[in-house]
Image (cartoon, rainbow, N blue to C red; front, top):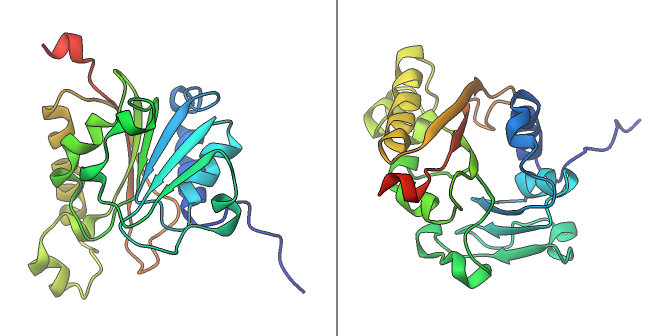
Length: 202
């Protein structure tokens, strides 16, 4: 007998749903707003945003052929395959976005922090999935055969990302352990931030 149908097109939807449950201030910023999903893959984050009332989502991924067919045929979704987030000009889509979510692999969030912030309107909420295996360096990843199980290393990864964004003027809304583990068994974090207000930054 088949189990209940999945609510979202990908596991990422469950991760983002947990974050929105944890931080109502972020949830309140979704309905009626324009969003960008960085590292969209099959589109779990995108699906979650749409189900919570986002008016449009630009789904960006360096891969191709991953976004779920249901989202490809949704007029609210713009798919940007084979595209590095660092090459995205928000003006191409009507200007910076009201909310940003990111689930990036094989790259440190610290290397794309400024590019992510360029996508955001002043004070936009951001939900980042922090994956320790892409933040701690190859030596520790190799030692753990791809799984970062040491709590100190996981904390280092989180602090590295958080400090980078705070150093660029972001405020931290909160941090939580992601209740859904990565496909490889890695335990991830969800980091909620608020983008800087550029007028204040000047």
